[in-house]
Length: 338
Ligand code: NAD
Image 1 (cartoon, rainbow, N blue to C red):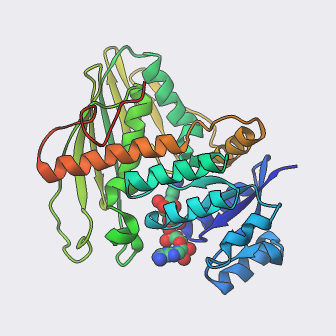
Image 2 (image 1 turned 90 degrees about the vertical axis):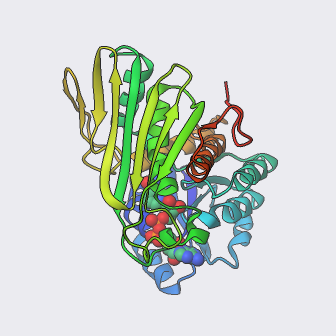
Image 3 (image 1 turned 90 degrees about the horizontal axis):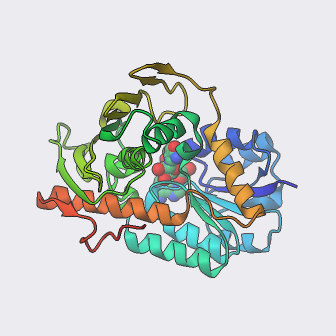
């Protein structure tokens, strides 16, 4: 019997990626929706055969507690709503997947972890690339030193954003491209190196559109320094398309370009291209979480990892604001974990 999933927030990611992926999952299935829009509710009810009693809105959401069809609540709302809905889901006795970035603040992330722990339920973050062959290959090449010690990582993720979206609203988004897509560069550098950063420096880029980027940064460049001496040079933007994860090692190099898109990832190394079958990474991610629940195992992308990354993002903003190198091990924001 597959576990039941409730999607909270039926925007672009739920509609175009998660719902289709939930048609391919084997260990979990789309059983409920939470939406503020009666029109969307009706459309989804018909398209995915969702029973009327499994359709919730934001007001009656907490009564999902009494619905045994639902095991997993998946939060796919604007970033500033992640904490509230993740905590309400945990209090309703459900396992939670929360989209990235986990939340705008460290305190919210900690409260989310505490709420799931108190409910004795699992919490994971929607980090799909940890289940995707090309990015797993980057981690394997880097961590197994296939091309020798990695000395430098270059990671860039950017897009040309449309105007008037919640992602440009500081209150709803928590930050700009850094927290939205730059987070993939942070993640990529960590799994490719297999290390946690000890220091960051950062510089916000100039704003060429003061209306669009009134509240959040337009772009950011930052570096992360790792214990081995490895340096990651990273860049993110809401005005320029970029999609690269590259590692330069003692005996060669390896890279993905594009690295973080849903489809069409391409892998190349100094000894030639590498190729894997195209997968639906979100289906693998959700089935893995269902498997963790069934076998009482912790997710490999747990809330603690979401918190770890929010601490790094917070330090990057602090470095940009102060113009100083922020030492993560000494910073109030960060304690290296093992
Ligand atoms: P979206 O704007 O398409 O959808 C957001 C949904 O939230 C909409 O259905 C909207 O109606 C609802 N909503 C409820 N209250 C709202 C409010 N006050 N303001 C605005 N919308 C409100 O966004 P999306 O692209 O689906 O992103 C949702 C979340 O998923 C974000 O946290 C984002 O970072 C994450 N995401 C993750 C990935 C990934 O690859 N893991 C990809 C895209 C988005």
